[in-house]
Length: 259
Image (cartoon, rainbow, N blue to C red; front, top):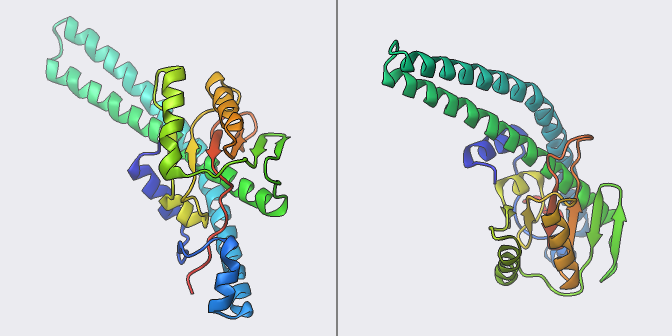
């Protein structure tokens, strides 16, 4: 999961404000009773603009991360070389142990920069995938129980109701029993980034598994066998797996803008 510091940086860089977790599009009837149809349309238009701005800013932010990662990786290589040289000098008696420890701390700090940047890239790609999923679900919704495979995306509408609160433990138990490790959840319910992007993710979770991996294939088979809705995405950057994940639950609908 993206570190809290990296998540905050990404959320701030998106620069989107004014979205609130008020209702999903399924609640249009309630909204119409509370306000005029024209106000609903105005809210929808405002939300569409905010979402478009968020996608634009996210794309710009993602484009900056490649050069940043390359610079951090070069610095990591440099610190590793320096640490190795310090260790050699220490073994020769020409350097103190404290200087060796300082070198190791420098390597750890450089590694953290690399890891957080890679996580930020994956998170940006995952949120871009969420936008694609939401747009596809709105324009081409699936019928109950329908299964669809398209390039880079698998969708299953599900046959049963999915509850994040009550069903997640069952999913985690299956995965741990099958693979001996915890289910790699990258987003549990609503996150700051979902707020910023305007997606209602309250009843969904994202799993950081590539759909082509043995774990990913096993998880999708389990979900489909048990009638649980999911969307599997192969990522949004050609030639890279960053952002590939499995979204468990119905597609994330759009949020309404706060009036």
